[in-house]
Image 1 (cartoon, one colour):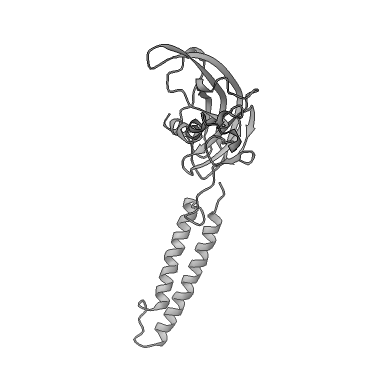
Image 2 (tube, one colour):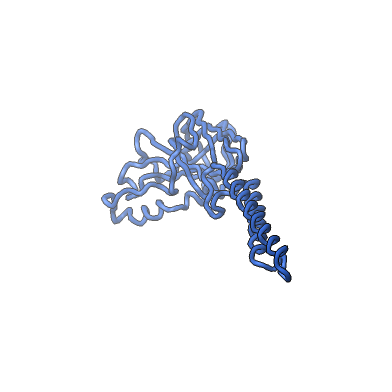
Length: 258
């Protein structure tokens, strides 16, 4: 995160200097003119306003405020390391009590907050490419986090989301997602996927390839959120309503509540 402390300190020093100048003018008028009020005059009023402003700026420097104060802060300086990926089939219990097959996609990862001034609160979303036109205009499958207990035999250590990353802090483990059954047979081959880091404190998102390697904020791309939507040439009457519902944010909401 970019630091604005030097700017707040500079502005606070400028206002403090202006306070001293205005106060000196007010005192000079008070010394020269009879019946001149030392405090009830425009010069001293301006000096007091500058003094309050100076202390506010110095407080902003200590707190690390953005500049201007209402500006939305930048995405935190998060580093991501993907050590390995995996794809496996397991079973889970359906709502009717029957055992059904579930396909999982996992990533062995480590996230670190390399910044020094802001905590991150992250949810990581997985988007998998679909064959163009196989699901109307929806170009990506939104894969939710399993909301059922994972068998210990899988040897996975899922990271609960959202997770907090204080400055200098790190979290390691597995990102685990379920590929919905209705997308099977529609996935692009070879599989192409991306991870989207959603910081809840800044409400900003960055995306990176779901591939083994190291990624810092400079190598990530800004994302507006949601699955990719293809052009109108992929519209079809049968899929149009499904495309509109799948291209929205229901996957994000489910991820955030996981």
